[in-house]
Image 1 (cartoon, one colour):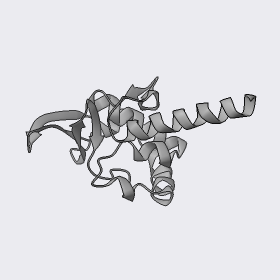
Image 2 (cartoon, one colour):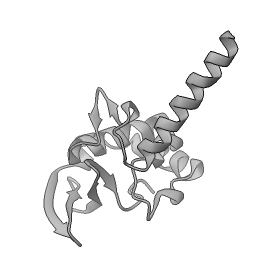
Image 3 (cartoon, one colour):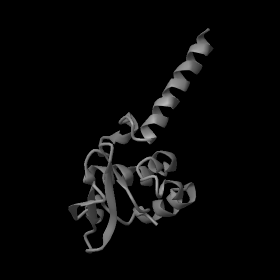
Image 4 (tube, one colour):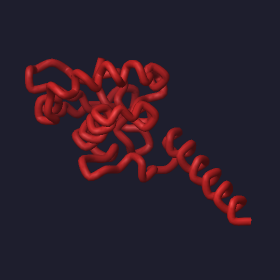
Length: 134
């Protein structure tokens, strides 16, 4: 009976994570001490921490459907080695708010003036629309 209860808890947790990935709820996985997906800078901070940890599976949920499948373990490992060279302040020097196709956008500009990525607000979460850590 105890094992059946454990299986049910795991199944329910998995279902909630799947819903979260589709943006229907805000999962606790999208929050950390260093940021959350609820604001542009916090979203990059959260993604940066996931990248440094090498957590490709959770990091994948921080991207739009358009590019999500390109967030692979291999890409994360490559990006992880590059991430050591940067701080969050290097990555997010400014945020330019805008709108595209009826959705709020946030262009993230790096300290060197280059664009890091554009985030798109999706169901209250700011998701990256490009793989910025390649």
